[in-house]
Length: 106
Image (cartoon, rainbow, N blue to C red; front, top):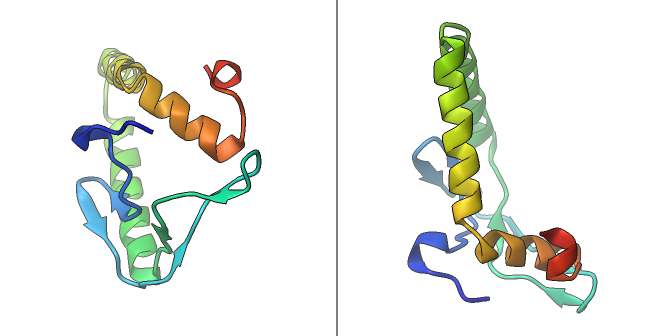
């Protein structure tokens, strides 16, 4: 899979802008079509990482309740545009994980 530096899977836990690897335990995805284990290995989240992610989600939910609908709509449109901008990278990742042909994913 041709990954650019901006679109590289790293397997670390991420919430907000933070990357973390507290536990050290990892797991891998498996492609059921090719019977291959996928790279990279993903880090299992430790309790502290889960707590930090949950706290950030709670803060975000409170902020969202105070946000006007137009700002929420603009955020969702931007998120959709960024997802579409991933193009083939996202399609290739999903195809590998699901064992599907690219045209069935797109």
